[in-house]
Image (cartoon, rainbow, N blue to C red; front, side):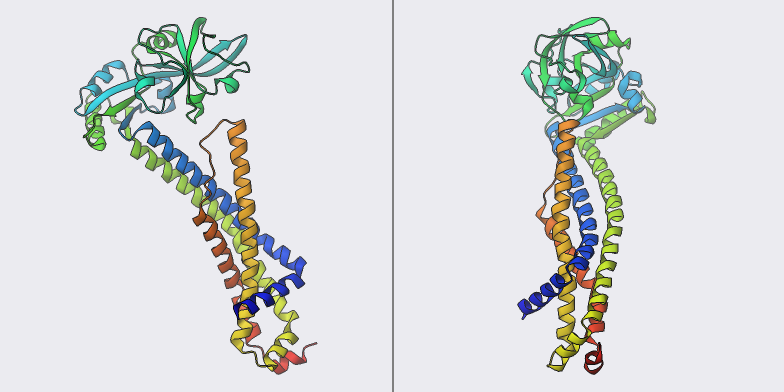
Length: 393
């Protein structure tokens, strides 16, 4: 019985192919936009979660409260405060860095990029920093540097190899290591030197931009973070620093992504609403065109429920067809954006999430939208008087 309804609905759609295609486009655009946006934001959320997991759940960040200006060496943290943080119960070790943007020269090319001055154990202790070539910096490594993964080709057009020399503020630095790709330009396009070298180059004695605090096993990370905040409050005002755990940072990022996703989905839903109205209009036209056919169906014994079901299946199939094409187009757009961003902007964090739940949900929703949009036209067809319908010319 269901198969018969499907056959009748399919034949009806095929008969008025041009109008059906135009109706399907409305659903297609809305579904494609929603699928593309959700798959990208979900993929980005998963990538962010993976990055935070790689950084370690036992890691606490202590940043200057001056925002990016503080991160660029104009903040309120210094090496004396490192000793205060190290004295907090549950703290295993504290690594830190000073960061600024300066001109770096290589083989006649000059570019402005991120330069970090790192504490001796930063590249060894913090999980997100992984040396894939060469070695990390040591405590007495003045005049040496480690480069981020995309210094070539994002910063310089020439390949930077081990033992090549970079010039930073007229000082030569020999490349001794290269970091694995992390996913953010401030990391992947950076040049890492020793903290003493950076403080001399930038003229910022004892200043640091940020601390990474590793918590001893068995201690609650949130409690240690609160103790660090209490300790720093004795030296700094509350707006001069920020203490955050990886869980807090991840939650904040996910909240932002959720708001962006909700905004985009809301805008894309307007296209779905227009598509639903288009299906309703098409079905009303279909009812008018099939008035005599409806009369014949009723004259040979078809009940109101049979007529209603035929038209509901037709509108549902229109919605489902738009959903199938929309999912295909949406995933294609998302994968295209992913490729462009990764290849031309070197941002590996944007990855598309091909979730079966998203695909099935989009198809189910499009079918239901089509079915609901066809309810009123289907009711009108089902309630027709067969005698009046047969008189129609």
